Structures are given as structure tokens and as C-alpha cells.
Image 1 (cartoon, rainbow, N blue to C red):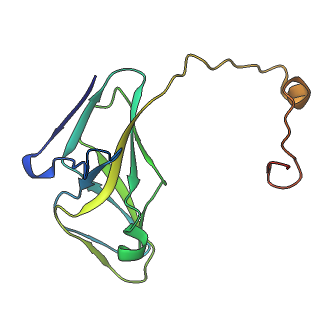
Image 2: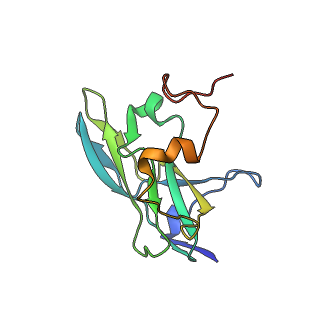
Image 3: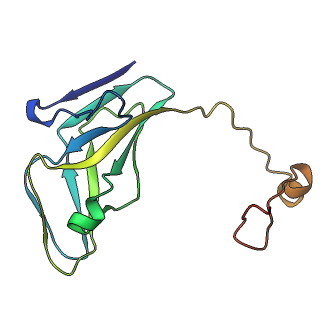
Length: 146
């Protein structure tokens, strides 16, 4: 079960039937000082079953149009979070940036996850590469060797 509630004018928008993402808007008008972070409310709350999470990313035009980015790259809303979603935005400009009320800034997507499949093995750290061999090369940023 995935449930979304929002203040009337801040409802997430799915642009097309085939869109995997929902656009979400800024709540109120904000002015973000140069080289600083602001915590912007969205007017959106979610209720997720266990094994679901909500991921919030910036819209792809945000850095070009506004010089803004999500301060921690991606915002994760866990299944047991019930409060209004707020997003941190970082202004990497040398001037103040205005984010208008109801401006579409972020995209929200739902995903399944599972932490039950994780097994921790504290004793084999030094033998890990032998136990689980790979074709990836280790000397160049762990790239795939063709």
C-alpha cells in the first residue's frame, strides 16, 4: 500500500500516464542565500508499507535553471516516516535564488527494498576477493575490464 496526502494545491503531479516519477512543488516562496542550504517543505506526506521507500530527486533542469541541487543528492523517505516531506536545497551560486510557491522542483518515486537479504560476515574481510571473485579490475576505480 502506498498512500499520499497533500495540501490541496501541492498534490504531486504525474505528467503522463507513463511517468514513473511524480513532480512535487515547493511550499511557499523561499529565498536561498548564496552557498547555503535551505530546508523547503513540500506540502506532501506519504504512508508506505514496510519494504517500500520514497526517493526524492531534483528535477533535471534545477541546476541549469536555478543553480540549485539537493544538498545530499537524494532524499529518502522511509516506510515509517509520517511527517511532511522537506527537502534540503543547496544554492551553489554567488547570489540569492528565489524558489516560488508551487514551483515544481523535485521528483518523487516509490521503490521496493529488502534488508532481510543482507548477511553480515565480519570474519572474512581479508579473504573477500578470494571468496567472491569478480572480473572487475581493481587498479582503475573498480571499472569493468573488457
